[in-house]
Image (cartoon, rainbow, N blue to C red; front, side, top):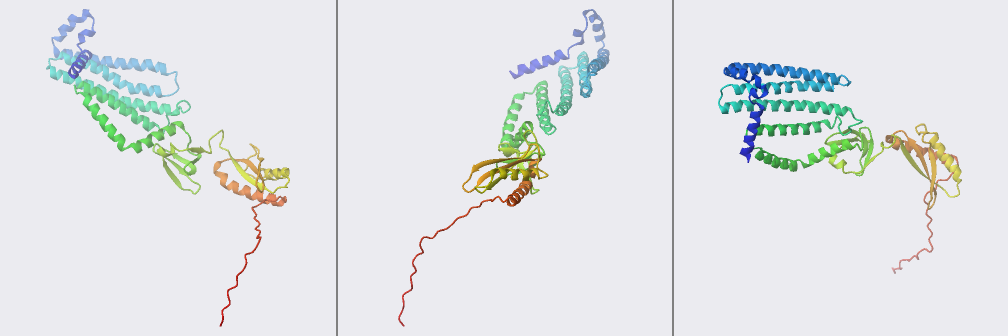
Length: 385
């Protein structure tokens, strides 16, 4: 079966680099037969003709596509044309060069070897040009963030690596077919090696793919303030392909593998419609207090604080009748979640002072102990001298 496939590949190469006579009109065949009587002359003529045809084809290709790309404002089209010029030229030139080789009286083995060599060069040229085209397309798509959020500057290395591996694999497969090597054994070996590498680097691969999906899904970004279910809380300083870094309020940087953070519950305090964050101040006052006065005093504390926002407006809500207090809650908004700790501290102090000035009692837990009866005291027995 494999030998039959190799024979078919050789026939395809022969057809590709076939005799020049099959490409010219029948009326020209007598003249071509006369030229073929001088192998060296026919070789030179076909080589020069191939060079001219390749140059003309590249010129026509450039002129035609330049007319089309004038309508676009970016330079991607022009760069793509420059990348494709050389492989197009070599493809046409090698086609004629292969036909020129067949006009020379060479042994069958040498002729096949030269044609395979030319075809191999073409495969390598197109493969390396494919690398450049891939890089160009990825860089272009990464700039269109509003259309392709999954392709970003940080995900380009992953796409570039995967794309190049696919191109190398395709190019290697074609080269093996050209030289009559059975690629089945190589593919089986590559599969076994891939499985072994996958087991050995499963943690690294897990972090890599988790990082890819984190960047693609964007549950958070650099500058966001997040809380994890494991207790970590801080500002995101870097989102990489392997790990995410958080800067805590203690100015300590925590590096968390993406495999862990990708499976964790994330509370993004900076997410939502805006970056503003709401602060809740629970307050308990004694029964018998004027509840409407309490609302006015608490709201005034928030309104008078210079770092509390007026839009949305601060508000006070009575929450419940507690065991020993009337429970209220002051709700106000601040610019950034990172300010929550300090502003809660300041608001608690302002509320305490304002309630004292207004004569509103803040209850605290008190326990009275009643002793019903004291135990009887026992005197020690008297001893005789």
